[in-house]
Image (tube, rainbow, N blue to C red; front, top):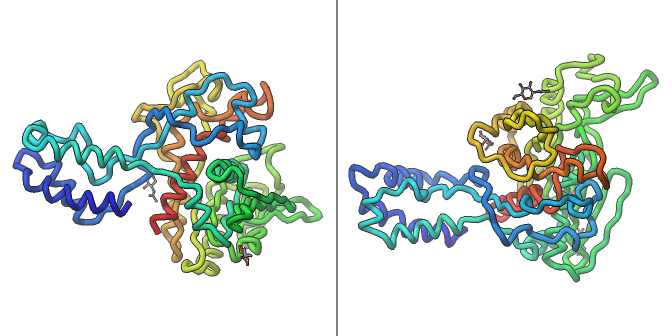
Length: 389
Ligand SMILES: *[C@@H]1O[C@H](CO)[C@@H](O)[C@H](O)[C@H]1NC(C)=O
Ligand SMILES: *[C@@H]1O[C@H](CO)[C@@H](O)[C@H](O)[C@H]1NC(C)=O
Ligand SMILES: *[C@@H]1O[C@H](CO)[C@@H](O)[C@H](O)[C@H]1NC(C)=O
């Protein structure tokens, strides 16, 4: 990162020297650079990379059967070969460099393109573990937290395959410790973040009361997530009433309930987190792909048989729950970093288990992600955010 900035500092003033009236783009980039506009890692594209995936899923025994697509017989492998490539941020992209500049300064142009290419997010598992020495990182949320947690375990285990580890589960809390580093990677299952109370008259989802928040104390990195369970109805809905303040009701607008619960969570963060000690992330909304018409496959059955990402610019779009998350985060006093993975994941209709989850050819899972796969990218982004702070 530091090298990148140093080189960019070197290149950009040079680019400015050769700017002429017909080349406003280069000037714009220089101006943006001077304003220190930060690089948005979430803006970019999926590119084919033959060195992918980041690990061999058959070498990672922690993967839950429902994410183990290859083991479950998924025949295609192209979906494993895509790397997330953030756009070059302040550096000109190829199409934006004028032919004039290419003629007059070919070396310079080549150099800035090299910089753009080198701007890949990387993952150094040993470095991650060293930073996590004597520390704890915890994912809190639903099975998408489980998905990302298992991905991180595989990425770290692959970096140090002979290192000893300890794994235990007590109720909703799973702790995986890399003994050599005394580094704990934890998962707290808590689908709503707020509490469900069992009363005589039924199960009550309490929008103004958290559940299990005591387990969040003293953790160095917290990564929260909730959304998918807020949509469930009928037999899949694990509550009978919703309580908002003193008001008990059978049901309400789900996005409004979600927002209320997030505000309850936000108050906990604002009151309890010391940003010097604890870094807080929100794992962005993970999109599912259950309507093939959305990407123009009118005969498609959810995500079944999809083997390529969506490259069309009209899709992805704003996810309603993502807008709620962003709205709540904007009101917060303490820094919470959004892992803004919704858009980049929306493009990956090819990366769900579909019929290759749940240990065989039944069920259709277009919500979770195969491992290796998309959650590995979320963890690369998490790592990039952790090392940039
Ligand atoms: C291991 O890490 C925990 C914090 O995660 C700390 O309380 C404990 O003292 C550490 N143990 C050793 C032997 O350093
Ligand atoms: C699926 O998507 C299409 C096109 O975007 C839309 O017209 C249709 O209502 C959607 N179906 C469902 C069940 O949401
Ligand atoms: C997240 O990404 C979306 C889509 O790219 C963007 O509109 C939004 O501003 C981003 N949010 C944050 C907090 O960066």
